[in-house]
Length: 352
Ligand code: KG4
Ligand code: ZN
Image 1 (spheres, rainbow, N blue to C red):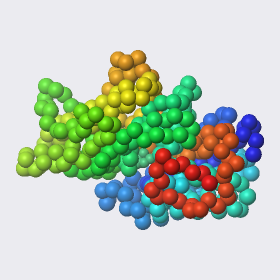
Image 2: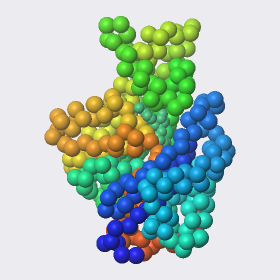
Image 3: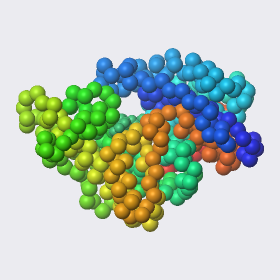
Image 4: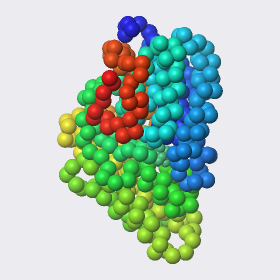
């Protein structure tokens, strides 16, 4: 395949609770994107139920494929490359996207490329920010991962630090549950924290684990446990004002840790550009404080467009398109073995 020509890439994301498909043109960018969120399906259980997630992906993926082709006004024959999330993620959910992608590839003899979900998140700001170039510090904050990378170039990611326990999004989700805010918790906690007023609401003391550790690792389960203990100490149903105090204190504690680790990463690597990506990067408090850090140090900060923070098919198509343009397409096989890698570290990218 000639990587200098314009090509259309199909991206399929099914690693967790969003079925996302997109068509990405290597010259024009996103042509169409469709997404089916399973939030309502899992809300009753307070979190993602893997088997239900797989079944929902299976029932949605085919109609979504028809819809994305029709939205982009192209036909299947126009697609040059089929990309899907190979891992990490829920094994059953990944299998649905992988099997669908493989079926399309076998049927049409088109090349198939399994994309690392974390890589797709880390590269996602490039979809809308054309002046973002390598190298940069890339922080991924999502429901399943909290990691900082030295993004040296395409396919070249050095892990600088990561959470030692809960992912930050997981801590947001669990805190939301403790506050009776439902699932997914991140946006709900953030919305509640916005009601905070220092004249009315006292700040709840919460620890900021590993804030001052010299390394770039993090920890979020202690903050969440401290929320649990604070609620236990109150001993009766929380008032709305108490919930607001806790939500704001929790969000601030998490934000301070994230921003401090970004600062240390830039200082330690000497890089002056950072990217924050993944579902939690939609958080406006984190964005605001990270921007202040960048302004203070004359660094550059980058975030994905809001709708591209959480899981989506566009980031998968985009990452595949970058590899295609980079010439990696030669390494694509029609049936990579194994088809999915539920625990695929970003530091071991192998497209064979
Ligand atoms: O990247 P993502 O869609 O899925 C994973 O790969 O994990 O991230 C989902 C996570 C959830 O934990 C959700 O609560 C969190 O992102 N999230 C937020 C916000 N929006 C989504 N957390 C804090 N503030 C937000 N505004
Ligand atoms: Zn994700």
